Length: 225
Image 1 (spheres, rainbow, N blue to C red):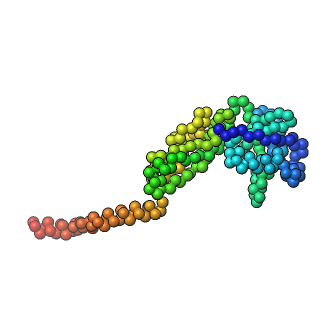
Image 2: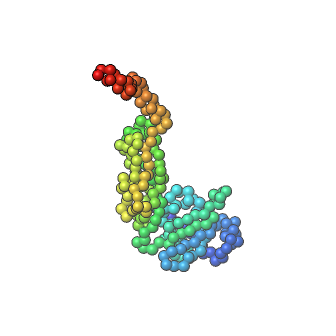
Image 3: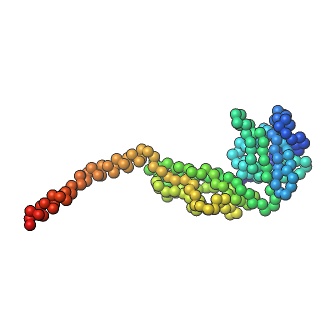
């Protein structure tokens, strides 16, 4: 599980685009805490500290303890709006977490034991279809990553969600199909080599004997009679 992050915040008294722009000029980022059968709570956080936490790579699947007004609110980031040009964070939504809550998160996958994959050893390529898994987890048991073992996998093999052992307390949010996570495919050079080898085998076998035309066969049979 990813370590919990701590983020100091202040209450946001004013709403609207003008107030939000003013906060951003001061190096703050508007945000809101919602959920948990309580009213949404507008807040703002320090842009620099938020940027550091976003840079960890696991901000969106980490518990974030927001310190505000002398108390700590346990949350999970649900959405971050970014500036289309500068990629600066403009707004953050935090989901308030109740005790024993279950949450839906996107957890990155990590492929291990690639050196033990026959398919990769012979030049195959790991084609990753899903870089993240959409999981429903206990809020206290959010995995930082899901490791997928490719040992023994050969060219043409596919890895589906049914092949993955998920951590305790986690289930796939997509339950209606056994979706593909990755495949091992042959690179174009390997495919060409296999095609050339197949053509060489055909050439070595020589041309197939031509079948005698049916008409000639009938004439010969008639002559014999």
